Length: 166
Image (tube, rainbow, N blue to C red; front, side, top):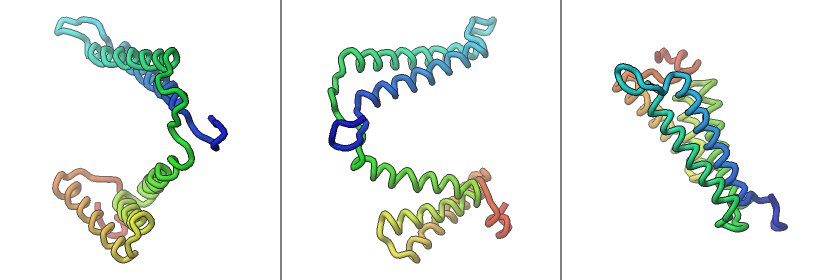
């Protein structure tokens, strides 16, 4: 969408897209609930009954939002997102994508270390040695909390394998 001030996304278009997306999610919940059974059994309602009710509520809310947006358009031509607003969002979102890719390739601990260090250096302006030390401290903290404390193994990669951490 554009209104002459550069490319932008209107709130009207975003509300319609969100209503359609949540309506599809609610429909998927209803469909999955019907597959596992929403009827009444000897022990009570089927296991899909309550999820089906939640799915119906999601679809109803989505239809309400869609109808209100299309018929009343309560926000007019209000801008939802333009390039100036997108920059900080991308500054947060793109490093998260990098964190995901690094975590899948090298393990969660290495991903956390690099993500925290990079965020501290580029967004916080910290010195590299301080950022790397902080990232390392968080990765070690995660290791002790999840692996030792809760005994929940997290995603590991070749670095953890090289260090003998399983």
